[in-house]
Image: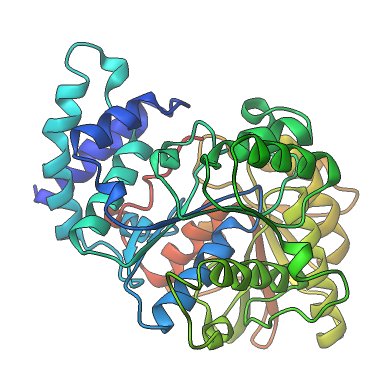
Length: 422
């Protein structure tokens, strides 16, 4: 058995213990490691939607201007190493083995007397990222929260800038069932005296973020002050009007930090690499579009892109859809049911995946319940539609990762099954 296989077995065991929402374990872990997260400046980004795109844009901007970047995001799509990138180079299998071996004895010691203090899978991987960024001396770390903000494992950082992208209802069972409650959790990343940048938020959520920033004595910046409605937004290669607002947020962030990190150009916004967000591929003579749209706000953006696609092509696409959770399923089905010529319903290999029978119950039209094996039987093959057709796969990011794995012929040994339970 290879070292990497042994490492994956260890990480699977951590994952199978489940996620434990809270920050105390992570504080103990980074302290035991000598605080690697303090060895580089950090932009910390939270929000219901857009945080990954904003992070990808910031990373592209800084790297294109000659800075060495660290980029932590979750979940990964195919390879675990995607979560801890330096200059967009993912952790190799050998590096994952090396960092795991460094961290294992420290994690074991923390959980020796109380198993509840042993780091979770997400905490372990976040620490691995911090270690890598410190070891490779990044100029700036762009850190995306996993869930929420206040109690998220990444919230041990001391940021040069905190960003709240958007606020909408999602993960209500953990973050609260009102916009104000969710905003309070996301605003938990705001640190005393440190600058805060707020995206376009509903009034109820905006009031909470402003109040937290004021209470903590933070310089405060609002995106709509810099880019009021009707102003010209930066252009980006990522599709959708919401991505132009994300680009505006990224540009404003670089302006706020311009004294410490001056930029010569924002041209990188025209070639941002962010897989699974209206990502267009060619597969078996078909145009395959992959788009993560996992909550109502994301589904609204999906509908905008679908309307543009139908108008441009003059016909409706073949669609494949699957998501996590019944509320998400209802909002997703309301859109795909109206825009799909043919509709295929699938479930990701994830314990919270919505059963296809429930997806179908949300529709008032025909749809085929199937699985990805039937739709993508071998690498490079698509079993639905004809050459020249457009196929859109949407819903859970986990599902998109599984499709990429199948069409690329990637083995699960890469770590694609190592996804967070939350």
